[in-house]
Structure formats: structure tokens, C-alpha cells
Length: 120
Image (cartoon, rainbow, N blue to C red; front, side, top):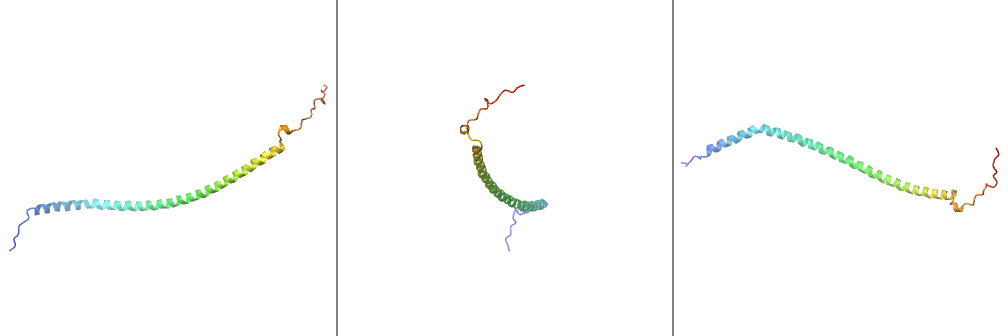
């Protein structure tokens, strides 16, 4: 014959287990709702991430265009500086040829002796 002794804590453990099962079952709908919300949030994050990637590519293309435009502007600035220096040199040369310094001018002839007062 078997020597069987009843476990004195068996009933208490079974009651605690049933209480835990009931608690878990009562929390299941909330857990399912939270799981669904997490799935929706995850999908939204995936969409947002994809949009950010697309935006990043557009920004990178814009940066490339800006860099190219900057190079062109810098070249234009350098060209304009050279042109400005050339025009300043031409202007100085023209002023020198057309308007020589006062010391190189021949004295003006006086017309005061030749002038007579006009009669009324």
C-alpha cells in the first residue's frame, strides 16, 4: 500500500492559483487593447521613419544644389572682382588722359586786357 499524506498547503496554493488565473483573465482585454495600441503606434513610427528618410533625401539634394549654386556665385564674385579692378584701372587711365593734373596744364591766356567795358 502507498503511504500517502495530504499536503497541508495544497488547498491554499490552489486558491491562490485560481485567484491569479482570474486576475490574469480579467486583465486580458486591457492587455489586448494595449497590444493593439502598441501595434498601431509601431506602424505610425514606421510611417514617420519612412517620411523622415524621404525628407532627409530631399534635404541632401537641396544641400547639393546650394553647394553648386554657392560655387557658381563664388566664381561670379571672383569674375566681378576682376572686372571691377579692370574698370577701375581704365577709369584711372581715362581720368589721367582726359583730366591731367593742374601742374601739367599750360597757363591760361588772360583776356582781361582785351576786354572793354560795354557801353550802355
